[in-house]
Length: 604
Image (cartoon, rainbow, N blue to C red; front, side, top):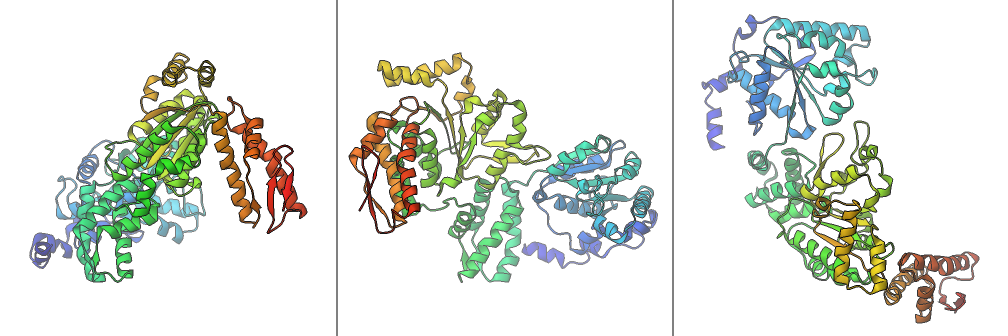
């Protein structure tokens, strides 16, 4: 940086002289009077800014220069998220044009950005707007040294007059075929799919160039270049490990956002926190604190409370889940591996397939994990796959040009969550194929062309397929270790699932049917929830063993598990309590017990 500052002071150097500009360089080109009125000359702008240092995009810039030199289609459509650096690429091109570092035919040309909002705001009559645009395009074509830039190109090929938009495709198409007319248009994936792809003529006259984000290594260099000015402004010292932590956490926790913007934004927030706390040094722990607040993900050093949760996860889950040791153990192990960072995997934190009859705790296990570790049952994303039985339902899941996807939109908003796919066997087979990439690589491309990442999620898939095998094994008292293989043989034979789908899971867990003893424990959990709710109303509920036994007796069903028992509690206990509270018979300060034979309320 010191060397660069020394070089900048040597005014006689060629690069520094270029900031001043040269006399008569534009005299060999045509006049652009109207264009100049409604545009910004980016070549002059970057020179006046001292040719700001722009990191990355070397491959993209070389490709763009080749296209601009073409005699056939020399118009470029830059496609990418706003944060990917379309502006930086154009600025870098303008610098190379100004310094004569491009192929000969591009050297000392002008990159001029058309200010469409200014043009539309200054001219109210649509015919006059079209006449002015035609004159501008004619000037660009005749000048011989202009590359025109139109930002947010998708806004100007649709008829929404009055909203700062206009359809210029008809006027533009006449010039796009001319080798003297060169244009760089920018758009995002939504604009591309929703508007530009609908205009096949315009699309055919552009070469599409998708812009990827810069690499983490390049993003680190961007941060390094920003450090001196930030340290000077805020009087703090930013440690190098803190920069590394910013890059690492951006990769892991903000995959849907793009470098370098996400790293710069995170650095700004971390510095603001340090200044607020009147610290003098920015450390990795400060980065972890901000990331944890933004994502609600535990990041950085594992605190004592979280250690206790992770080490005792099985016990905590078993407070709500009776039996099902294999499922609880598998999920708990996956959570510990993911949090400590010893698991080298590309996919989600954990992927599990839960097989078994209804009412045995498959969905409840997912809810419990979400509540204990992820902070709330609301952090669970749940989709009933019986609603996606047609191939056309794929667009509902991942979105289309006109709408967000039910799955992809929720994961983009809450990437750190439990994702539950209920009754997966009822979904269309093509949807199962879609999940192969999710389970394998932890990502999916949505209907708008954006990558959605599942790497901070735990995916739980449930299925009732082959539950008859489990019930039959229960009757015949088959050794439980053999049931899983029988069940898998059945789903493969009936082509419910394919082996390559099953093999993507960390574990396939067969949930055991619940015995009467299991249901006794579950009835306690259900009644404890009622007791907790009544405590908030200052009413004491006394739970008795005969009551639990009566609920199990009426609700026991190997086929429906705990579901029938839940109905027994709703119909005989919750309804009676609700009526008593509404009528005033049951009020604050009362104690209540329930007669196990008649379900009559006994109020003290």
